Amino acid sequence: MIDVQHVSRYYGTFKAVDDVSFSVNRGEIVGLLGPNGAGKTTTMRMITGFLGPSEGSILVDGKPMSTESKDLKRLIGYMPESAPLYGDMIVEDYLSYVAGVQGMDSAEKVPRIAVTCGLTEVMHKNVGELSRGYRQRVGLAHALMHDPEILILDEPTSGLDPNQIIEVRQLIKEIGKTRTVIISTHILSEVEMLCDRVIIISRGKIAADSPTAELRARFGHRSALSLQVSGPSPDALVKALEGIEGAAGVTLAEAPGNLVSALISVEGSAEIRPAVFELVKQKGWTLYELVLRQNSLEDVFRNLTSGGDE
Image (cartoon, rainbow, N blue to C red; front, side, top):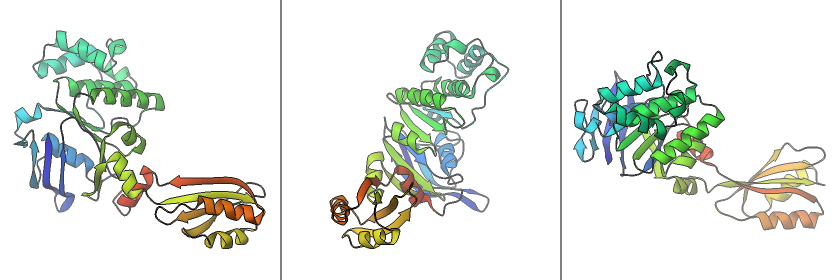
């Protein structure tokens, strides 16, 4: 559905996007991740045809996208991070205006899109009076008005409170059942909840492109064991743990009361919990905690984008 081929984009002498290539299949929900300034928004604007690439090409539905490709642009709905809305207009009037501009029958289209985006209760209010969550919904309704096959969302839950975030995520997940969706975000929990696949961009280049579960498995195999015991001195605990096969390193951690705590780095996929348990038992120490902590998606993101421009 979308094919980005060796695309670069310059702003003067600054290279915001550097030889980026990826494809998005019909029906996929893809998360486009990266730190601030990594090139996410520029990449999305090129996909929509708002910006042209300095180098490379973008195909949408097998045809080259350009700033003049009106027919291809009709396949895409785009919601920027701060949706440009007319705050003095009533929601219903604003959506009717959008429908008219796009050649839609507003009498038929607006009530249906209001139900889809959960706007029925606020159709009589001014856009400027709405909460940020409802304004995001209006922006989403705008992007969906012409029934696009592709939906591109830039930070769709930015600035929302926890309840609004849940509501907007549920809405996006429902919409994504019938459309190809690209979501730009830096909220990792959002990616895990919504996206089938993750593309991570760092300093204008692709650092990773993988299904969400595989990304974590590939870069998240490293783990650590959190241990809390009573009985030994900190030095004695470290010395004993360093002798366990598969322990890559031991670091003391804060612990309450008279407990001693350590974080044990694990080599590869080694399973050292039984050995740690036997050590504690043999030493006569009292075990309070033994927890395996896998690398999270946040850890993967930090590892892949460390050194990027914030």
